Length: 110
Length: 113
Image (spheres, rainbow over the protein chains, first blue to last red):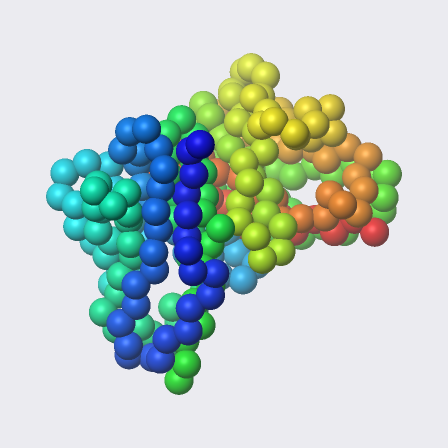
């Protein structure tokens, strides 16, 4: 079955530390891949997307993600986390329509 | 990207009443819009795909007679929750697809008493 998996429900990192949020997908072909961020009570903001080409994509707010076909993964990274990055992060794929992972809640410790 | 607005941002209604939520694409003509529902601390679940000038396509398990969708123009789709019940309380988010990505509205918080 087609699916998007975010294995980590909740991650806590210290401000200034590096961050990696995991995303794995299970689809027949390489879908379009996305990362979104959602602050409480808000809609979703697009951080970055991958369609094809360079497997390392840069996004807004200093985020990047790397597509690894062999691992069916699209992990999100940031070298130095800021307190304002605390939010819910969703990985999403589009095959015919957009499907979301369960989300990872990021807490940033001072 | 596309800018999407929703109205209202929150609504409280009595059980049995109907509520209409508007989704507008402000800078993009969207032939297709998407409606999602998000329960607290959960992910977004696609409810239906709204097609301009034709019937919406509903996901399995979503009652089309309860969640009425109208996409009368390229910039406006509406979701009407008919005969709302407390279990319909949720965060409803619409989205448009532009340039291969999807852009989301700010969401509408519905509380049914």
